Image (cartoon, rainbow, N blue to C red; front, side, top):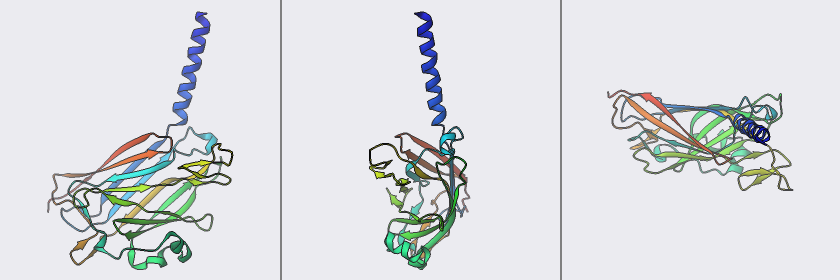
Length: 251
């Protein structure tokens, strides 16, 4: 009986270790302002990357992020009236091909990679265009001609004059025959489906201001560093927080 119990315990532990390995998503995040001086109009640079080398069955896909929140440094401020706000709908942006829909609202650009669950398949490269929008941004992720554009609409929340939070909801990009059902990719019979996952995203925005309105302003004070903090919520219900420090100058 003792041998059977020990054998069963070893089996359970082995399964637990395997489960941990399968969910071993490695996530990195760095962010900084383009301006190191306090109380100045600035752009920002953002880079995040994720992978899971143990998930060989799904081409090393990482876990899916459903919400990506970024807490800007205390004292920093945003004002979407610092440039022209884009009012185009998703359909209008897709029909126009992105940038032409809101030329005067472009505030940045970058790159992304989309990872498919098919073993051996290469990542899909995409371009990113960022537009100013009312109390937020519009991110046009374009992997054409391979796939349809992905449009994300981050929103600034909290105190916009003192360390706002940029909150991005990332809906699942389901692969047919699966569809988005309550934030999860599922087939018609209710079983789990597959999705294409954004595994790399980098973006640089430029300083913008119009009259007294400044799109992004650095904190009024500098004590050596400014702190950004990202909080990620994954599709499996887990979450992770990552901090990013940048050096600053008083004058």
